[in-house]
Length: 420
Image 1 (cartoon, rainbow, N blue to C red):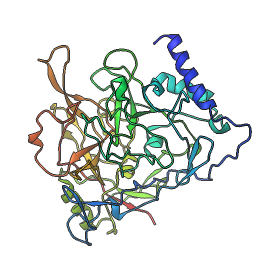
Image 2: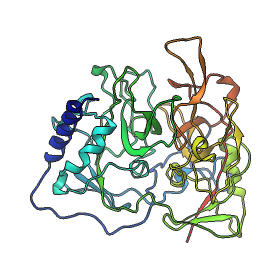
Image 3: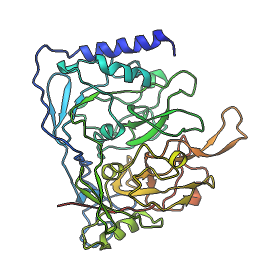
Image 4: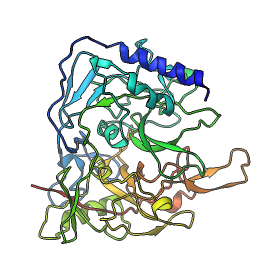
């Protein structure tokens, strides 16, 4: 990318950041440190296909996300272009409208280079300590009250984004610019330590249109640099940093999040309903209150400095033990892990969120030579996807979706409990 295009992008960011600049402000940051995880805001209950009433204790589908609210989301609109998260102690820009024209569309998107460079000149709300968020900071904003759009859809009617639009400004992809509804990827500062699509340098981002974390190649498919929405963050510099301790009894405590984890996973794949039952009936290390983690809890223990190719491990701290599998390409890898969070679609609750501690595999065809196709890491270890709660993975020999995402259905489990 040319110097002029970088400069132009930074000017756009400066304009957006200056829009809300005021001479005197109140900091509006609560005195919160550490890594308190915001709840997913999921209040509905689901079986394998649809919404249901709350399951009784010990019955099928007991233990899912809506039964554990966690730290309920709580935001404050500071009326100066910023929103304060009262759970995490983080302050956010309210809108990804970079050019300040009041409309969120493709003209507000910037490259990773521009996003990183623009933070130092941002003065939204009169503050000068803005930064591009890490993937863990950015994921703190996701709300699983969202509805996953149909990829080919052209209408947003009936859809709900995966971010709280009472406080944050949002828009889907810009159809007038040739984008898809789902093209609402927000960039983080977290780079993948490996490559996606075989050779692509990659940054992790959160898509608040379809409710996923993926690694996005920094080069656009048609050439040039890929562009993203972004919001800057400030405050709580400890957010997203784990503080693990080995309890010597097969459990690991994270003193930053006040969560205790099983050191080992369950050692085999199972469907979502069986995973919930396994969690509900497990007694271990003197505790009987183990549960399947929600999506944000499980993502909190991803170690984005590790990957199968670069550290010969899962993307998790070495204190944890992770079962090795053989992936779709026939290579040593590590599993997808279930969460108790349903990933709702417009008329269905048939999928649940899962975290990829190994490669996020997909079946891709070479566009320049359609005779060449195969399984590759398309989105990176540390992604969050969704998988069908039940069914047969053999029905998806070439995966599913635009990148041929691997469908496994029988995913692994790592249990969690809250430390009193």
